[in-house]
Image 1 (spheres, rainbow, N blue to C red):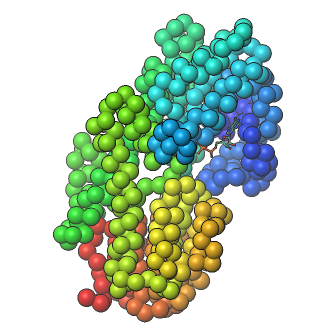
Image 2 (cartoon, rainbow, N blue to C red; image 1 turned 60 degrees about the vertical axis):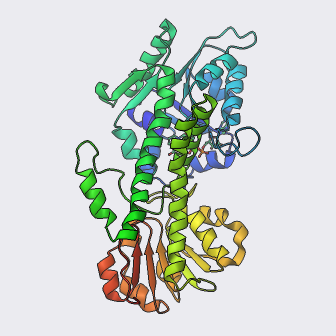
Image 3 (tube, helix red, strand yellow; image 1 turned 90 degrees about the vertical axis):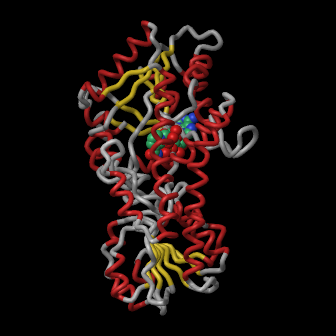
Length: 440
Ligand SMILES: NC(=O)c1ccc[n+]([C@@H]2O[C@H](COP(=O)([O-])OP(=O)(O)OC[C@H]3O[C@@H](n4cnc5c(N)ncnc54)[C@H](O)[C@@H]3O)[C@@H](O)[C@H]2O)c1
């Protein structure tokens, strides 16, 4: 919404949210999320044509176009728990729009939803005695956290799904015209609503599947002394495949990949497409397995025990350049290490607040430290779990000097210089590569 406000000075954008604390943060100098470049965009537009408010009813009443971007997490209860999307926030929003609208509205699904949700939304909006017309469109968001501003400024594509009816096509043109303010027309795709809804789930599933495919291969590399970076480079040189998203690591995280694949699994199952459901489920199974393998490798390398050993976890965000820790592999890995009675010290430049919240129940088995050198002081091992530039550029000689011997480094992102670290004296274990150990 901030990008629309930036690129379309003639459009007034009002962001409303039930969470007053978040709204206050959006109105302050300390935005509630860390996203490179976003502060500047918000600063330019806020108070001009970008407003943040808790007045939801007024927001609905006063605006012609409503983007619904509420959370759609995986259901944790009842039917479909652990798989289906929890649509309660979306459903409440639809009812609120129905109750507050005093005129016709274009309602746009910006959040990620199961296919055919727009039909349910339309039914709710047109229920009762409403005189107004609500045109429901799908406009899924493809940005990636950490590069959101650049992704929004120059998206690979914007996708807008609408009904083929005259009112659907008119609303479609209205939304196309907004994006046309800064996006070339060949990157604005239009589709029917169901294709648009499904394309978002499909894109995330295919991206995550590439990660799980390369991670499955990384396990075979470790067993055979092949090197996953050499393998994925050779594979990615095939122009039909391409290099992107072929990097082995400790697994994908983030609020979307797992949730959206499970949503797809649930959808396939509900249409009795059980083989398709199982196919996609394996992407998540491999991702969990990769994290378990990472911890198993730590245990094995450290003489089968980490009890009372200090392990510095460098990076808790699910990827670099974000403070978001939702579904971060660091959560599972830290918990497993604590189960093995390790003393875990978590360090992250942006995600310590979320990390404290995620691991609150673990008490003093987990410490939180902003300074990586202090985190690694007297540690037996360092585990790199997020590829932040600041961790890549550490003075590892200094890190090594402060550690207990033998010193171990486990690179869950294949992002540090393994040969150099081995020369410094570290026993280095990376993903999908032969170990570099002085102990063999
Ligand atoms: N985070 C991403 O990178 C990303 C990318 C693409 C798509 N999406 C999709 O966008 C949607 C939102 O994701 P998110 O990461 O921003 O979630 P989020 O949980 O960070 O934000 C959702 C916001 O909606 C608010 N909300 C909930 N119910 C409301 C209501 N009835 N009225 C007003 N506000 C309400 C919440 O208070 C919260 O601030 C999800 O469907 C997600 O799959 C997210």
